[in-house]
Length: 224
Image (cartoon, rainbow, N blue to C red; front, side, top):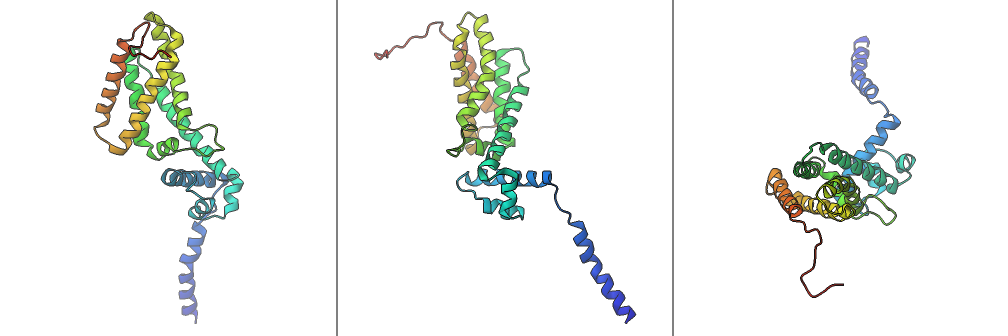
């Protein structure tokens, strides 16, 4: 009997140690887990195609836990978008270290392409349609935020070359939009290689800027 009891006791040990190994997540850890799951699902299925039930199920928790941390799907989505916006804007801002304007264009193009390549899920979320209740975090607002940073650089260059610096916002929006939309296309085809894509983007942007007219005019019949 003593031997049997000893054997049963030893059999019970792995189960008890296994239970001890599973500790409860802290609030911060649970929040990060839900953000990671939400990020993946939003990238795959979009906002409308993702449900709180699915997020909770993948996290192994009940729906109230999701509501407790984020107030609902909209709150979780807003935090995910805000993080991705901040990540991309930081990558672009930190990349702009060169003094020569052409190299600045190269750095900005590489920063966006790097983000697309390294944080594909995040980019998928940013370029998808946002929910109606979401006033920020759209692709257009993202382009606008990056263009604002480029605008200051262009404004200084315009002034030094005799162009009206007040026109810098137009060109900043055009340049950033060109790179962002090309990056969206490149994400799907992945051809040619990233440095070649960056080189062609800079080629168009730089030589276009070099040939700017001080007073551009239309050559067609339409004037208004």
